[in-house]
Amino acid sequence: DTWINDDAAKVVRRLTRACHEADLVGGCVRDLLVGHHPKDFDVATSARPEEVRAIFRNSRVIGRRFRLVHVLFGGGHIVETATFRKNPPPQVDGDADDLLIRSDNVFGEAHEDALRRDFTINALFYDLEDGSVLDWVGGMAHVESRTVHTIGDPIVRFQEDPVRILRAIKFAARLDFGITPECYDAIVQCRGALAMAARPRLSEEVLRLMRGAASHRSMWLAWETGVLDILLPELSSLLSDAGDD
View 1 (tube, rainbow, N blue to C red):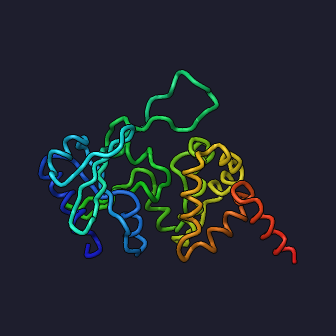
View 2: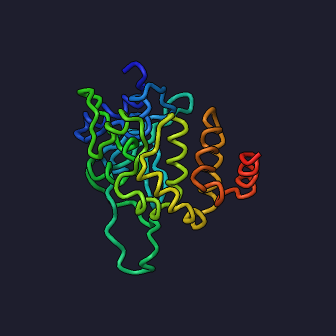
């Protein structure tokens, strides 16, 4: 508990006092469980954005398609607070082969919010009141086995959003985790879909792969899986030539 940010705890407790559900969620919970100091603390709540805004005068609503509330504290610290969401209903029009996510602003319940996240290790909720981890997706088992796996079929999840391939590599490298065989095979199979992804998002994730102490392993995993062939073919070729020497 000493690693839990005081501002994030204040947000959770004030929301629960106002009769809303609220928990820490995502990367901060994952990092606490593996013994890392979280960089950011995010809160998920049953309160709608306008309700969160009414509770915290020191806040602002951001985004149009996906509305979040940033609760502002001293020193420029921000606690990002999001309403529980669920997967939107299937689209009846448009290209049936296009699985890329277009809508993500349907409010739901906590367990539905967990199911719409990308990887099991990122879908854990922490209840501050009783100190328990809420796990609807089998994330604790993957934390304990130190492996990265998608929520649901990896091929479907990577086709929905190919940038998740880079996120899988990033988490495996940074956390020193393995990747489950099913997920690894899906990365190899779906890597060509990265060519469909928006360039700004790709660039952002590639830069994240190259930052920090885990950049060497990130690039090695990207090369080993063939992802580097899609993103940076010249670098991939250079690494392949070096391996042949």
